[in-house]
Length: 285
Image 1 (tube, rainbow, N blue to C red):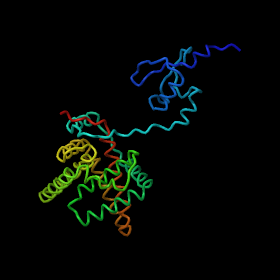
Image 2 (cartoon, helix red, strand yellow):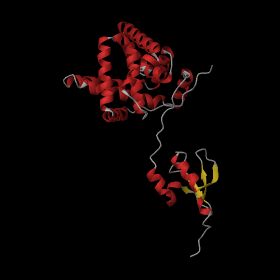
Image 3 (spheres, rainbow, N blue to C red):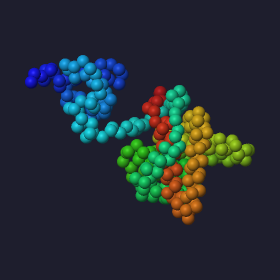
Image 4 (tube, helix red, strand yellow):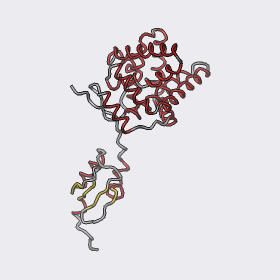
């Protein structure tokens, strides 16, 4: 039976990139490699040599096994090694806007704790004991806990000692950040309860921003306040669920709080990832 197109040509392909431009021709092996690296996904349009129509690469039989075998690429935020530009990041987030789904954050938080139960519950338990005994180091301890949880959220290797990373990575900003937020919160409370609630909600992500984005305490507080202000009521709802989880933990013979506390932290940090997960904007020297 005659072949409708040259056998050698069928193993060369053109493709439409994510930028809408046409690339190729490339070989079958090269295209398979790009699929494995995540540079080409199942929906990428390709045109085998000798044909006129474009079709998703996943519909071609020669690539079926590649998509079955290759797991979806895991994207994690890059490691931040220098402080980000807080004002530029705030402007970028406020321009693109963000969505905050409390139920989704809660379900993901539960799955994270369930899959890393002893690590996260154990870390939260030890941190709680230390804070109860030496409250002055609450900032660095909370920063370290956020660091540990963020590593697991991003599928990065983590160990118990990471919960003390706040002492080595950002001790002074975390210490001052918590202290300033606490003092200003107390002042606002005695002036009027409403300003206190506003500030507590607005600064929800200040400590994660310090440990994750390498910010000083005041830029982190201001960045959190500006971004939270765009959807203040949704973040308020998130913290309200945290409070309800804590109450539920105490109702379960008090020991339940050691499970609900890490779920609350994980839920908050998933919200943090959904809001602040854009590429970091490096500070210009």
